[in-house]
Structures are given as C-alpha cells and as structure tokens.
Length: 129
Image (tube, rainbow, N blue to C red; front, side, top):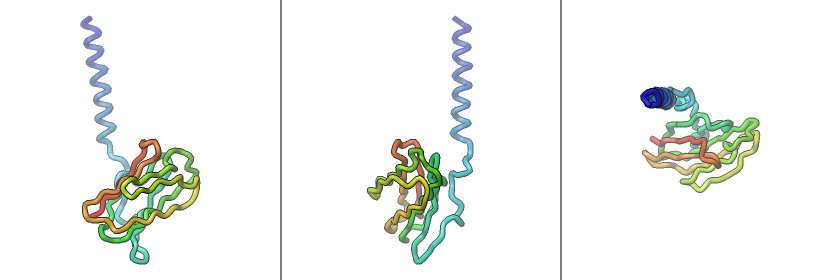
C-alpha cells in the first residue's frame, strides 16, 4: 500500500512539472514583431499564416485605423483553414493555398479580436492599442 502511494505521488509530481514547463515555455510565434505590420493606403495590414495553427498567435496592432488581416495558406488542409472570427461574424473556409484579405473596421483601444479554427484547437488574437 505504501508503495502505491509513493508511486502515485511521484507520477503526479512528474506530470504536474511537465504541465508547468509546457505552459511557461516561451514560444517563438507568440508575439508578432512590430515590423510585421505595415500601413498601405491608410489601412494597417496584419499578416497571419494558417497551417497547423496560426502564426503569430498574438499580435499588437494600432487602434482607430482600418485593418486588413491577411491570411496566407500554403498547403493548408487542417482545421486552421476553417477560420472564424466571432466578434465580426466572419466564418470562411480558406483556400488550401493562397491569400485571403479580411477587412476589419477601426477597433477601439483595448479591443481584442480573436480568431479560431473550426474545432477551436487553434487560435490567434489581435490586441488593439
């Protein structure tokens, strides 16, 4: 009985430690570099790649300016090709390869726009500041 309790505690410690490491590990695609955004003809363009998830997963953008989310797909056959942005009522199956521009009206400071795949497994967010 004592062996089972000790083995259970060790297993719980290993699993818990692994979960903490995964959650706290930095991801290279977590934040878009500021130079990834561009402004063309008075509209800011936010590039996002959809394949096996969305890259970058989090972006900071300027508020109060018309915005285009430019989604690029290259051989994307997973659920990230079925994009939904609930707050603007956007839902579309993206082409397997190509570029899809999504026009977003100016957003207020503090707004966070979230996008997700059809299964909710993959997400991205754009924070407007």
